[in-house]
Length: 162
Image 1 (tube, rainbow, N blue to C red):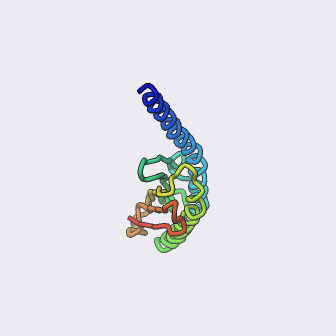
Image 2 (image 1 turned 180 degrees about the vertical axis):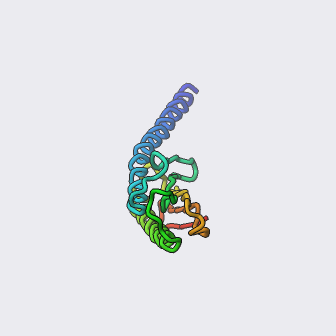
Image 3 (image 1 turned 90 degrees about the horizontal axis):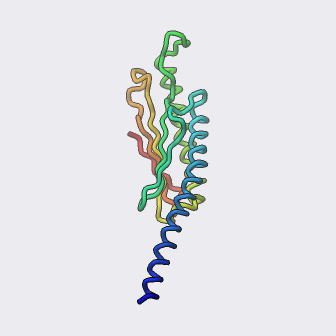
């Protein structure tokens, strides 16, 4: 009976340390992943840093990692900037949206399978909130882009626009 009790206690302590170790590993990976997402967004939208202080990541047990970030494809009009026509604004926003989508898809394809803190059945999702300050020029632009990749198949990234 004592041996069984000892084994149960030891197993519980060891399991708790494994979970803590994987969460510590996720926290480290989340910092580098967040920095990579920030860089990809900044590259796609030059001169416009993300609204947040950076990408934020969390781990959802049974699912995987979720990373969120906010940005704008074009700054709002103001009396001190050079005026652009609605067609110019729309063209710039379309090009940046395409660049953002390609950059984040590539990022997930390259990094998903390298995340050691994720189980082989876990997924990673990037949620990009897009602030459309010039909605009159591009009323049909998405307000969210959601990218999802499974660790076991990182090449196939699912992209949803809302």
